[in-house]
Image (cartoon, rainbow, N blue to C red; front, top):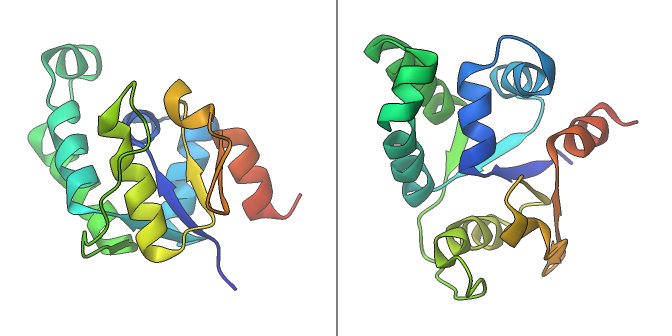
Length: 142
């Protein structure tokens, strides 16, 4: 059975601009459909907004076409949820609840995150919350 995963925004920003390392490996895995990427409209909206932050644009200097291509790749290779779930679990940062809701709606196996609010949970209703390196190892079966 294929692995289903939700990837949070901070990881996706790294994936968007990755030229090497774990983020590049994760980007290649998305394109190769090595797992089922789950995404919601709320997550896409946040990612689009963050990718257009002035400090992100200044640091990475992407073209509009590069950003549109990345978002298009995600849409092409991801399963888009209906957004029917809503929950209130992370009081310190309620904006992180969208990742839990997306994962719950689709029965995801993992949430890949660097966010301390998510990572401190470790598990949520059977969903493991892990870092990029651990996720890549699991996909590769190591």
